[in-house]
Every structure is written in structure tokens, then in C-alpha cells.
Length: 197
Ligand code: S3P
Image 1 (cartoon, rainbow, N blue to C red):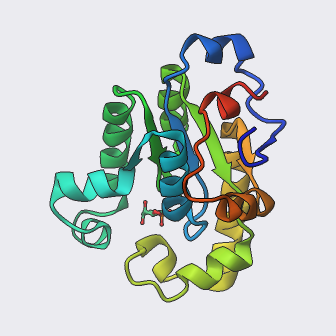
Image 2 (cartoon, rainbow, N blue to C red):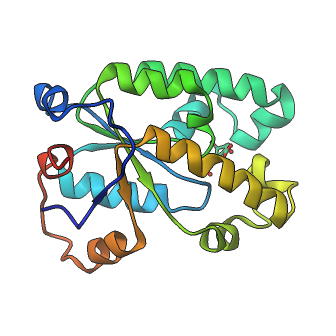
């Protein structure tokens, strides 16, 4: 078994049979800003022998600008359109763990891209206070930068519902603790996650 991933009630639209057809399909890691997607995603990718991909990094490479510059110069819609294009391109390849931005799944179209590709969406469920302490005052996150704690909490609540609806599997803090306690060398099979439900 992988590190104790708990199944959510969400994602009933996928049957086990559909997933078994494509064992090489990607894992997509979603969660709020500061939830730890990059750190956790890199560790999971290593354990599962998948290529780690971060959609924010690809957006920055494509545009040759940082995300905060893109927001400042072209606005959020431009960034979101680019993000959708990156999702479309990324799913063309298999064998990846794709970490997406905190707002990526706000667009139903993006959720659909991953579903159509048969990829498995995982939700990294990190408590708001933990995320908040990591993102407050962070100038590189334009969506968080000018918001009060209350505003961020209401964004977190809205997105929480979206992540839950989109994801097939939920990663809890207990799962993470178990992952961090595992020896670096241990290997897991991707099927342990994707065949679990
Ligand atoms: C965003 C989250 C960021 C990045 C962009 C917008 C958001 O990614 O995509 O700044 O809307 O929540 P992280 O979740 O990795 O911070």
C-alpha cells in the first residue's frame, strides 16, 4: 500500500475498470497555495518513478517571465489561458506527476482536460492555517499578495469544494507524515494509488 492515501467520496465518475486500462496515466496533484504540492509532489514522483512536472514552471518558461510579472503586465485572464494551454499540452505525455497551481482547477475546462486524458487527480488537503503561514506576505504569489486573511480563507473554502469534487484521492497530513518517515530509498508502485478505489 502507498502511504495510507484515503479515498474521497468524490470522483465516482471513474470506475476502477477505466483506470486499469491505462496504468501509465498521469497523477495530478492539486491543492491550495502553500499546501506543499511541490515538496510533496517531488517526493511522490521519486517514489513512484514518475517525472515531476509543475505547470507554473512551464507557464514561466513559455512566457519567459515570472508569474507575478505575467499577472502585472498581462493580467490574470492571460495567465489562466496560458495555464489551460499548458494543461492541454502536458496531458499528451504519460508517466508524469503533474503539480498544478492552486487556481488551476477553478476552471471546469481544466478538470475536464485531466479527466478526458484519464489522469488521476489527487488533492493535497493541508489545513488553512498551515497554508496561510506559508503564503502570507509572499510577493511571488499575486493571488495571495493583496488579500487579507479573511479573504484568503473564503477563497480556500470555495476552492476546497472544487478540489474535493475534482479529486479521486485525498492526501491528508497523516499520509504526509507517513511519507516523510519512509526511508528515502523505498519505492512504491503507482498502481498502489490508482487501483485503490
Ligand atoms: C495561484 C497559485 C499559484 C500560481 C498562481 C495562481 C492561485 O500556484 O499558479 O500564482 O490562483 O492559487 P501555487 O498554488 O503553486 O502557489
